[in-house]
Length: 279
Image (cartoon, rainbow, N blue to C red; front, side, top):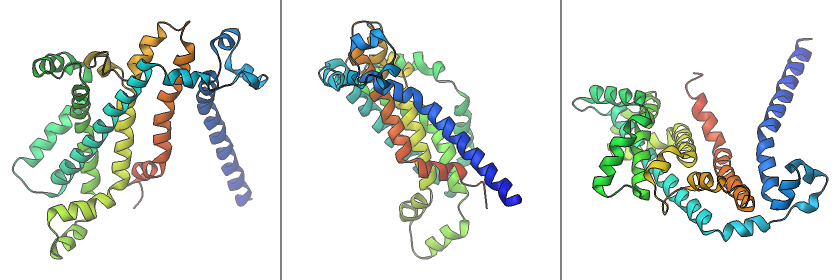
């Protein structure tokens, strides 16, 4: 009887998760089908009509997207913003997290408390002062300026996350490495980074998704030549009736990239989330 109950319980949970997954994927599927329809077909009915009339589907819209200079430039701007902002945050946070967890230096705890205090500072507070500073430095309206803003505001959470993860590593493991003649850099690269891979992967996913989907920072700090896909899509929406053939595939491209990144690193993400939950 207990086995039967466990089996039924497991089956119900699995069925529920399947339903949730289908509901979550429905907008993605609808957007993909919409991106394969012409503007005339879209005006006549919703994307679900393609289930009865698959002849509506074609890749002409993606050809038009590749020919749209604004959308293609915005896509590569998004890549040039998201990738460096993610890599820099992960690298700097890993170095700082290791230093705060295992290195002794004056003011370590006070500096770490300052980093934690920065977590409660809203992004909106720094927009205007940083914009004025970037204007004086010649960074306003440029891709490096947007990247620098994302890095500076992403570092407090990243350092806090990795420091706490690194601090949970067995002290004996690091002492054994030092006794074997390993210096701090070798211990960090050969021991700490491989062990901390789940937390680092989780951080990379969070940072990449946040930067890729950001519009507030890009709307203020990027000009027309450096604006990412989110801002370009927002400007294209104003002309929705005349450019749906470009808007739909552009929106799908903006959505599918972070989804693909998440599924590519989901195993490490789950390990990072579950780290420390069991001994």
